[in-house]
Structures are given as structure tokens and as C-alpha cells.
Image (cartoon, rainbow, N blue to C red; front, side, top):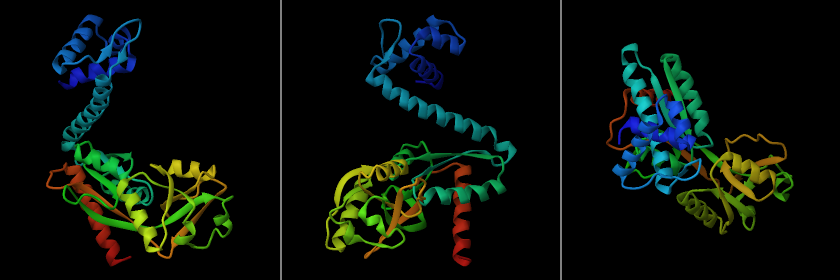
Length: 298
């Protein structure tokens, strides 16, 4: 496979029509069809179901389309970084980030970083901690802001912050009657809970409840803050989420959980024993300097 062939395949996958794809690529249809056939022969499997006016992607085709998008994006970022070396530090910094405190940390760092390196662009890749870790392991991104715990055998990270967990609920919930008061963890026992979609996080929450002599009643899992807001607004259950998350919808109450309280810890991670680009390394050094300055002048 080469990048040109992947680009041709991606355009056909988007158009699902050889004629339109050829027009978009400014080429005739027969060479394009031959390129796709050659790719299918190389991979040993059909990528499209042919028949009628439109094509359909096979399961192999769907997988290749996802991978091709990632590879073509990585190639473009690499071209930008290599081509811009003569202009000083520039290119696109790709940073993975979970929800909670992480986006606010990233925004503060990027604001200062771009003051020093105004030619740098950035791309934020959102997802769960497991999503971000997977992207780092596969080499699609080099740096990620995740929540602990993490695999320190394959990743190395620096602690960058922490915050307490809270309960996000509808104002119709009886536990929302005292919105400004901390909420003892035991009061959540027996309540329908929605927790982060991550096995290690679920285990951590169960252990936390056992410290209070209780067991959580988990009815669902969420993967982003929009899900948290929607579930709370509809009074589906009470979501457990880091406290930084702002209350952006009316009718929603956020109470800090105590007795015992528990912290969500954030880390900036990279792949262990792997080289990273000059841009990523410079950003990592910048963040490290910022953290050291904060320790000296909190």
C-alpha cells in the first residue's frame, strides 16, 4: 500500500461511486478502478460490494477506510512539520485530552506555548483515557492528557493536577435539595448511578464505595460530558464526574462527594522509550517548566 493508493481508496469510499470519485480526483475512471483492484489484490480481499449505481464498503473496506484516514492525517502532519523546520518551530501539535480538568489545563498551556511559538497550530483529540492511550500506542498521537490509573509499563507520565469527584443530577432529584452542600458518599448508596466508561475507573468507584461500607448501583456508563448532562437533565440517574465540569444546563445540580472524598488525578503521558517529534518534546518541556514554576509560586 502507498499513500496515493490510500488516498484514491478514501475518495471512492466517500463517494461510493467511481465516476464521481474520478471527477473529484481529476482523473479518468478506468485507471482509478485499476488502482482499487490492485489494492484489493494486494490485501487479498474485496473492499467494495459492486452492483447497481452505488458501491458498498465491505467490513474490510470499512476497517481500511478508518485506518487510511488516520495514516493520511499522520502523513500530512509529518509533511507540515518537516517542511516548516526552516521557518522555526511550527507544525501541528496533536494533543489527546479527556474531559474534566484536562481541557482547562491544555488551554492554559497552549495559550502560553503559542506566545513563544506563534507558528504552531494545534489539534485536540478528545476521548476517554483508554481511547487516548490507544491512540498513543498506535502512534497516531504522541502526547495525551489522561486520568489515572494508567499502564506505566508502556507509558511514562507526569502528574499535572487533581480534583474531587462530584455527583451531577437533575434538580428534581431529592439529593439536589441542598445544592451547595457536600454530599456524603453513603447517600449515593441505592441511587441509580452512571459512571465513566472505563473498567479500571468502575473498579476504583466500587472500591471507593466499599470504604464507606456501601455498594454502588451502577445502571449505565458514560464516555463524555455531553452524555453526563443529557442523563442528568432527563433524570435518568446520578452521574459521577470530576468537579471541574461546569453546569452548562439549567435544572442540573452538582454536589461534591465527601466522607470519604476522592480525587481524579490527571497526567500528561507519552509512549515509554519512544522518540517523539521536536514539536511534542518542546511542548512537553514547556509544560514541565510551567509545573515547576507553579510549585515555586502556587
